[in-house]
Image (tube, rainbow, N blue to C red; front, side, top):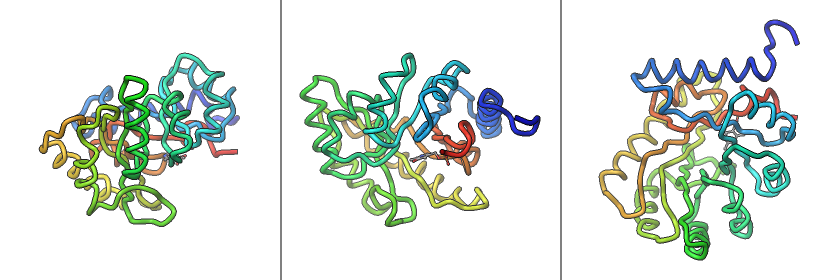
Amino acid sequence: MTADQPDLEGRIAQVSAAVAEAAEAAGRRASDVTLVAVSKRHPVQQIVAARDAGLTVFGENKVQEAEDKIPRIGGVSWHLVGHLQRNKAKKAIELFELIHSLDSVRLADTLDRLGRARGRPVEALVEVNAADEASKHGFAWEEVEAAVARLAGREGLHIRGLMTMPPFFDDPERARPYFRRLRETAARIAEQDLPGVSMEHLSMGMTADYPVAISEGATLVRVGTAIFGPRP
Ligand SMILES: *Cc1c(COP(=O)(O)O)cnc(C)c1O
């Protein structure tokens, strides 16, 4: 490690400071933004080190990988940030407190049924496919408001907000219109006062663009590389 390549603790301190700075610059409190450390493909040992350095919320994108890692790491909470196949939904709700990637009505049906069966609703965010990319999942902008209305009022499912992942741009400012649109869409949905729907969370912003996302209202930023370094 050289002085200009900080170690894990140093990177966590840098990202935490950048989160606080972006929040304050936007007139928000640092505590309004939760850093979700995306630990996919990083080993348990690194995640434990990140926990011991003070991080409390971690994100994984695959149920199978998470199933192996999560039981070995206590004392933190876990979010699923990747696409969820319905045949893995039961396992997923045992492992994760929040599903960021509710991307179809069929998956919502499954989660609702599982939530009712266990007597506690599944907490989820509805994903928007921001630039209509074939490689990404989620509802189109044009359909997301109707979709959330359709998912409302289910005993086994609480919709807690929206999530999106714009294309990668070298200039993070180019992601801003997508983040802004997510915030405006969530505000319109919130006005409808739908049962079982609250719009307190906007999950948006990754290593390349989280300060911009925070300035547009992100409450959950999903940061991997800036914390853990490049994925092995
Ligand atoms: C991998 C991943 C991230 C983190 O990406 P970085 O660029 O490493 O910060 C965030 N969100 C999702 C959905 C991911 O799959």
